[in-house]
Length: 156
Length: 283
Image (cartoon, rainbow over the protein chains, first blue to last red):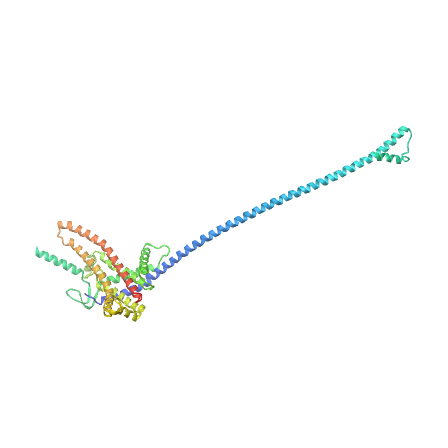
């Protein structure tokens, strides 16, 4: 056995090497590995969160879309209702107008008839006077027989 | 015939002896060149182990300064793999948390593996280069020097003692000596058993590594002798290919051995320190 002072030199070298490996290799390497591990797990968590967010957003979009569809349907039905109402109103007002026109026309017709009757009365009395005078060959004073003539005209 | 055999036998012994002698400086025997006393330095052991330690340090500093978290190169990947492998070992075997254990294990694994790897360099290459430079004796593999392995195992032993005192407390540690493993009625037996157990830890660590690498080196030397022993002629045609084939086979096998030995040294260190960290009652 030749154990010599070499042993102690080797002990010192070993301890120094442990120190160096601890500080120059293990420290940075371990730090980097831990850092990388953390970043990977963070990235995965972020991806997971993003996926969840997307799912939520999709769900929300679906909801909003459904809501919008519902609203649109409501609006359409409302518009239809309104248009029906308008048409009904128009019908009612048209009918009223028509009635009014008919009433007016009737009134005008009555007036015309009255006017024609009046004219006819006048004509009749005139014709009666002329006819009578022809028959009698003499002139009849219209004024004198005004009552008679009026009665005649009223009978027509 | 017998004379030539004995002379060739002497040459073989000399060749092996020469290869197994350290480059000794200081208190050395002038004839055998072995260390004669305590104050002798094995310069080759120190040189190669320090050079490999320096390699680790330089590579560590270079790598540690430009670590690429997102696009690691092949070398960073390799070191990351080793670091994570060591981390896994520590996590699996070591109870509790101690930030020193993993770097210690990594250091042991890297350094022991690199020093063992010197065994795979052809046995005569570096000594021949050394002889051109005027260096007569050169033992390349630092782990075939008991000084190296014992230095590492004693450092580990120092840590075992330190953590035993720190975690169990002096009284707890003393209790372990008194009442372990046979209970309180066998106190003298317990003291002897526990003392042997504790001392066996550094010794087995050091001697296992030393023995494996020493034997491996010896086999390389014996294989190297096959071709060299043959005279010029027909023998070369047979022996040189045999030597190459055997050398290659042993090289492959030894690559496993050096890795395994580095791994065992590392794992046992973790286990011993883990035992030092557990309480006496759980022990």
